[in-house]
Image 1 (cartoon, rainbow, N blue to C red):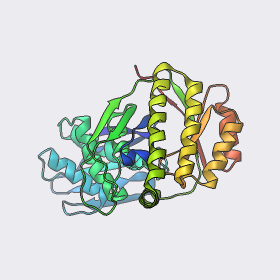
Image 2 (cartoon, rainbow, N blue to C red):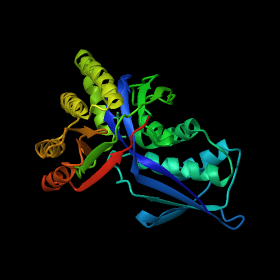
Image 3 (cartoon, protein in one colour):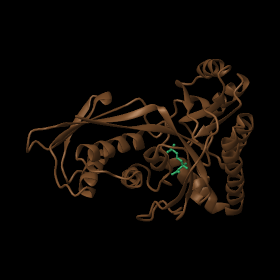
Length: 324
Ligand code: PMV
């Protein structure tokens, strides 16, 4: 049996602006993970996928259009293998569709497990490219930040190089300028789930419509995000956690101006700030999903309680490690 795993993620700053070529920063969440286990199966039995958490299992072949099966065969093909007899079991502790990268983490664990099982090595860049292709099936034209931070499993500064803002156009290349980021001190976050589920492509499409209607307004918002991302990068590298909190608050205000926040998210953000969080913002596509609050050891329990009281459907306390 072979097991592989991949972390969840949060976008610390720059969501939406990243689609328009501005930088974004994403962090892996080592405490939340997806797993893929592979067992061999008798010759000729084919490929069985099991999603144990969902109580589902299904056979897939080379012609499947189902995303995970398609990814499994794309991975096998990239390794020069045309067919396989195996049972792949997927499990995950990452909340589904909440903006914490559950889909990309499951996909990354699957690709890593297949390459380990078949004794072939895949570079994180190859894993990331396979996962990107798969994510396109769900999201249309994702920037590629999720698959990058998860496949490399380290904090990243991500700038999309070939911004393609037309949701209806065909294939795009996920080329991006990616730099590993250093984090001087571990960061403690409390993540609150608004309980509202909104597909990533909905707010992304709405921002695109508004950007087309009023490009100068949106371009200056995106430029402000770029400056903010640079300041956040410095605060991470120097360990200025209090300054980081203030910068996250500013990013939230820009996301509100972009029109991707929501009353539910803002209620949670206000509750976290009142309970002592150093800063708080939505993370991911918005309109629903999660918000993140930057806390410390002293106030994280109070922030978590405040989030539950304010209606969060799930509250997760997590630590992002320091990276040299
Ligand atoms: O829904 P999430 O957490 O994967 O975040 C989407 C981030 C956006 O910048 C809004 C879209 C993208 O493709 O980067």
